[in-house]
Length: 336
Image (tube, rainbow, N blue to C red; front, side, top):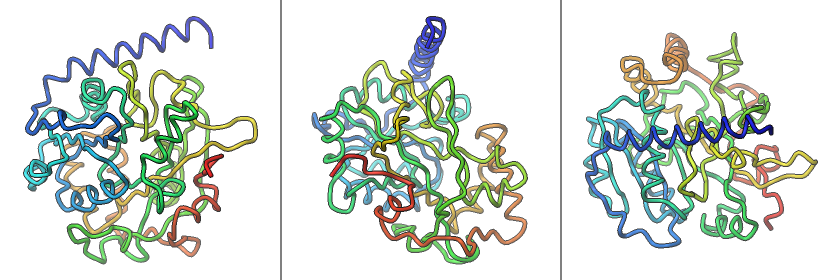
């Protein structure tokens, strides 16, 4: 990387950190329990709106993995999400009615809270419909993974977003509050993925899966990106550059081996396609707060004109993380 490119990215990082500093005024602390965070606690952070039906299982899943504290940013919910989160003793809660889009789709808010409260901690940056699966997650807590990463001085851990869906119409079976979503959305695409490399930020760019083959069949290059770096050992100088798809400094994005080996990675099981899907699409199309003029949600709305069914004869039923490793969707690297 040349001198000019290094300078440009350093300047970009300073600009993003300054944006986050300015956006701090948009966040109102409703429940600040950050004083209870232990020195080795893993912190999960998420921005949400009207997700009360999902929150009980989301919190239970990550508590069971070993997450000890949650930073939750509520963006104008009116379904009881804010009130529910305020009652949780391991949740620090902020509220904002400001524009999600103008905050770079929440990244500015995340960057500020992580800078202010999470320095030196491993953090999990998530959506509330994302569930991290990593090697040995059925027997080892997330602290075992972060301890291993610390041993090898690895600062970030990648995960591919794996869209999960039911067999049959997406809305056929009602999702109940607190339910494991994968009792319904049990299937995924084992193939149909493309990978390229971002020349500037050096991160991998992954597309494909059921959304690319159905909702974006005519323009798969416009399909949502499936690469994320959700687990990071946070330093005051870091920032998310584009949602949680890539970070600065860009060395945090180089989480792959170009010499024939494999580095450890995980998957984010994505439980978007449940009976709640149609109402969420209607809400987000009305708000128009998402990327590229809500292009993704326009595609979803088009699919809802018929009977949204993502299942096909090549769909795989999810079993466990070892299945995903065999299929090449994640790797345990040299973690034994």
